[in-house]
Every structure is written in structure tokens, then in C-alpha cells.
Length: 229
Image 1: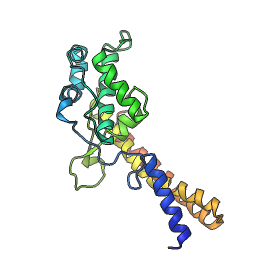
Image 2: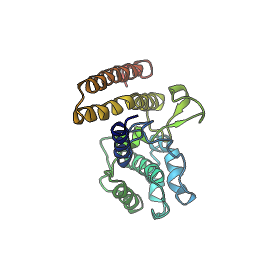
Image 3: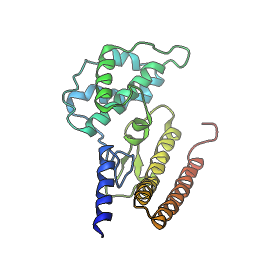
Image 4: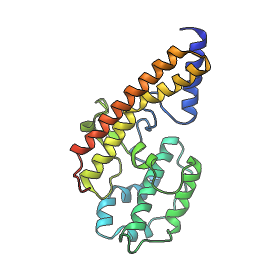
């Protein structure tokens, strides 16, 4: 590999890493954690029962009894991402437990304070966002198996059952299918800087193939979710 090409590749890898973009997984969080340190067990116990607690109208009562926990024991980036997923999921359920007619307008301190702190640390808004629902909410059933829907599961499940689970996991696969396109975009930018018309054309052709693959993957949604979802 020529020195200039090697330097461009290194710069691209460093650029991706600074934005927590993985060369292998793209925008997906690589191998998300499934458990927080034991200090945060009260959060995890509620999050793991989220659909039942919402559907039985018990979530708010359980949240109101939670202790106010410090975020000081969230040492790693992946721990903070799981904490944001857990707290945003609980918040979503707390606000909308009774549906659109009776949303909660104020969160209890024991939920609001750690949620805002984790959000600030990550630079994320204190709401449930795509980076929670999809990018950090997947795990392999068999860690040695392929990244395929039959070997995937969500970490936190929401009301909506298998339809919503399928929606999340197909979206995970779409994100994985986008990885060659992320690389192609970086290659296209480098081709413009060189400049190299051939390299630019090759990168754009790769991007086209990636978009087609993403579209095919997204089409799997039809076989997983009912039309009325």
C-alpha cells in the first residue's frame, strides 16, 4: 500500500473512532452490555419488566420507590450507553403509562437526575432516541453466531411484543448493511481530495450497491410485522 493511501486510511479510521463509529459495525454500538454494575440493580429490575409494568399500570408506582442513584459507578462508555437506554426506556413508560390522555409532565427526582446526568455525559438528549432503541439495544443469542435476525434479541423490550422486537432487529440489520456505504463515503471524500476520478467512481458504485442492500434488508420488515402495526 502506498504511503499516501495508508495515511488516508489511518486518518479515516481515527475520524470514525472519534465519533464512536465502528469500522465493523458502523453506527451500531459494538457488543452492547446487557447488565449494569450491581449498584444499578433497581434500574435493571424495572427495565427488564417494562412491558408488564406498563400494561398493568404499575410502572409509575415502582419508579416512585426507586432509590436516587449516583452515576459515579458508570465507568465505561458502554456502561453509560446501557444506562441511557435503561433510563430513557423507563422514562418513556413513566410518561405514557396511561396513554395519550394522561401523560406525566414531571418526572420524579430519582429518575430525572441520573437521566439528565448520563445524557449530558454522552451528549444525547434526555429522551428515548434511535441510538437507544436500536443502536445500543441488540445482542447476539449465541455470541459466536452470525449477526442474523434468528441469532439476535433486544436488550430492553417495550410494549408491542414480537412486532416491535422485529422492527428493532430488522433496523439493526439495516444499520449493519450500511457499513460498506460509510466506508464508501469516506473513500469518495478522499478521492475528491487526491483527486482521482476513477477512485471516486469506484466509491460511488460501492455506495449504490450498499443502498440496494439496505433496501433489500429493510424489505424484510414486511415478513415480520403485521400491516396494522
